[in-house]
Length: 260
Ligand code: MF3
Ligand code: CO
Image (tube, rainbow, N blue to C red; front, side):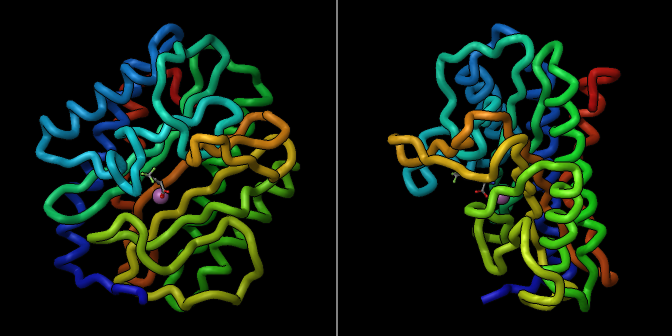
């Protein structure tokens, strides 16, 4: 069941999306070699609460933390830990904030220190593919058109698309219909309509698309242990096109010339 939002409801989703954007901007200031991912989780949890939000991943289906931590070969849903970030790592941080009863969901993959050009290229392509997906999100077209645009963009650059995990609708719930895959055929799936609020989140691998879920039941990594990148925006469809409600601007501001 797809819940179309009124213009008032879309307005009411902005505070959650603004707070998640500012939270990732705050984390950007702390990401450097030596910091533990658990420290980042604490910073995020306190920042969200201090700003009137609720960390929505914490306790969701038993997820034990505020942040999903995706270091190098981790694709999604990794736990914060006492791992200290190392020069040359990439770290995806994916998290959801609840504010004023609505959810905002966003992910950004950050380079840590000096990162190999090939891995930076994977990050850039993944981020670009998110924008390609947003551009394909036009009222009257179909969800498959978004999916196909992302897949085509990434596969033409010799990366692979994770298939087991998808984007999704969002609202009062973190995951609403429709599913928004990152692969598939054009012209299939639900028709895109004004009032839809969607999360588009390409998860793109350097090597094969195959993934493994670790024995903790959550952590998802690439089977070949090659790196994976992940970027996500929450966006609303109105005036026949997609308008991101989350922004990377605070990350850009925090990172300055290190922003990729
Ligand atoms: N953006 C992630 C998703 O849509 C957030 C997961 S939160 C968790 O799957 F609690 F499920 F980990
Ligand atoms: Co999501």
